[in-house]
Image (cartoon, rainbow, N blue to C red; front, side, top):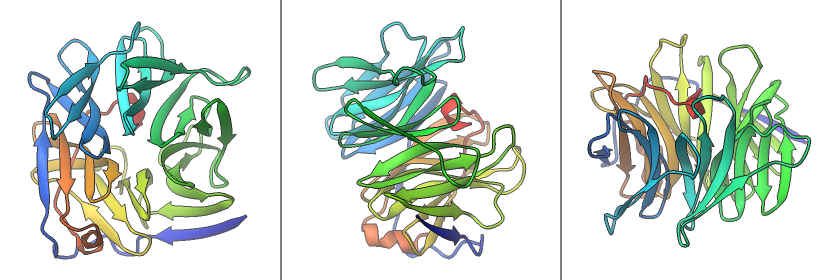
Amino acid sequence: MKFLILSLLALGCQSASAQLNWQSFDVPGATATWIDGIDGENIVGSFYDGSATKGFLYNRQTEVFNILQAPGADWTLPLAISNGTVVGSIGSNTSYARNGFAYYSGISSWSLLNPPQGVQNDLETYGIDGANIVGGTGSGMSFVLNGSNWSFFNSPFGTASSAEGISGSKVVGRYYNIGVNGGGGYIKENDDWTLLNVAGATETVPRDVDGNLIIGQYRVGDWSAPTRSFIFDGSNWTYLDAPSAKSTWAYGIDGNTIVGSYNDTSDVSHGFILTVPEPSAFSLLAVGFSGLAMMRRRRS
């Protein structure tokens, strides 16, 4: 088993060297909007309409918008999408327990993801790549699910962890110590582990990975400090702060497009879609984005 340590050596921004195209995205009539996942032209997320949190699936090319509400659930959080399969979590307003789900958009079919007997059925599914689904349990374990095969593991860096994103054999996630605020990030590729932490940060959370590109967020300071986002390409770090926003949460990446959420100065949550003309330009970026005081359960 191999261990590596990657740290951000400087927190200052470099000047922007690549043209950016970012869009704010709001569900019409919603009081808050979040975007969590992207696959090609399809994005998934959730919104609050004043009474309930509901999920959505939106195709940017056809402009078809579908509300996703799992049967029997009080709230539905779609968190990632791959090849038409949406994964996320559902729950009840009267219980803290969560349940993972897979929604097959091509046939409009829902499936609950129930872990094997003996594993606490309180989990969230955060990422998907092809047939592989990743997430975390309420007891603090990471997992990879392929078909009916579950693999549970913990990182070697803390007492608890969750797997947040997957690309091929590479899994990214967060580790933490139960009962202690903060934590850091990990990269797992087969039996090799990499510690991925922003130097000086009290919390680093990788959220998704696409090839060599990893996106996520970090905070320097306590829970009241702004949250910033990052892109890491294996060598270079880029920092994302949405214009005129307090904090920024980057949640999903596909090619040269990043999706996430931010808060405006009135603490209203909006989704964003950030596009860079060439994927190679990620290493040249230094943007101003900022974002999201209104946190959902996945974002703890």
